[in-house]
Length: 215
Image 1 (cartoon, helix red, strand yellow):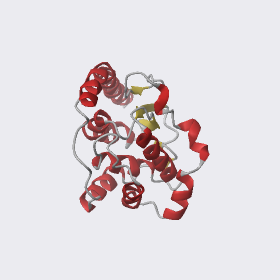
Image 2 (tube, rainbow, N blue to C red; image 1 turned 90 degrees about the vertical axis):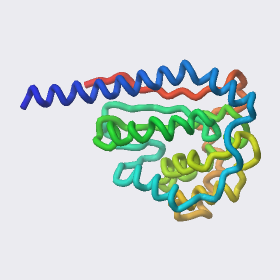
Image 3 (cartoon, rainbow, N blue to C red; image 1 turned 30 degrees about the vertical axis):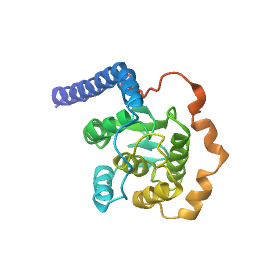
């Protein structure tokens, strides 16, 4: 039994290392990809209304997993995966669709690691509006629902699609119960320190990292 437990621990560590390697590779490639996307004016058209299929998909992915503020997973987990992302970023969306589901199902759901998403608003002012709306949703335990649903309905960056109506539709689909409180919370200055300014300059980037495996 001791050997079996040791093998299971090694297997979990191998999976985390694989995710870390994938994130490192993404970080290397991402600058070039985003330059291409920016030069082409972004990807996709205007987002459509939030569909029940999107809502159901997100609910299924997150169902039963503890959520504390901006963190998804068991808060007692010794391992933390931290993602820095911009909700307008098309490469971040690709990561959300292609990597995040496996990360959640393989290491977050079973308590091996917890997963934190930090807002890194470097594309434009609409990114700041989206970030604060997501953080306001965290006040009602719907941060991760908001993020994943936003990515499923993401439009062309800085095209003007991030309106109050759009954000409200995402919030409702994410399960935010008190929309009036959410509206007040997203206007709060308390998020300023949690949302880096898009005026920082430099090349847009989105970095996903994993903390070292310990214990």
